Length: 69
Image 1 (tube, helix red, strand yellow):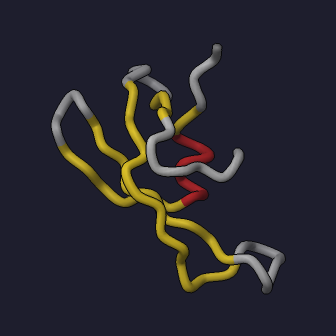
Image 2: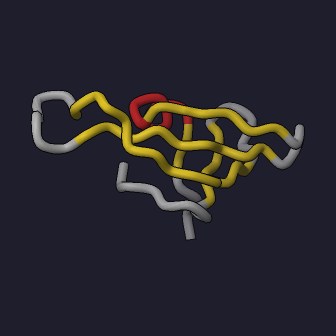
């Protein structure tokens, strides 16, 4: 999965609901197998329930997809 930025739209697997990336933070943990780059944490806004939560980059790759054009 590509690096996401605030404002990007994602589609959740399973129920196909859209979520919006609201904020991106760099974690203190390095990426797997790489000591130079660090993992990211994303705050996702769910419009259906008006909630937000923080998700790790590895979880995003499994549970969400980018919308197809």
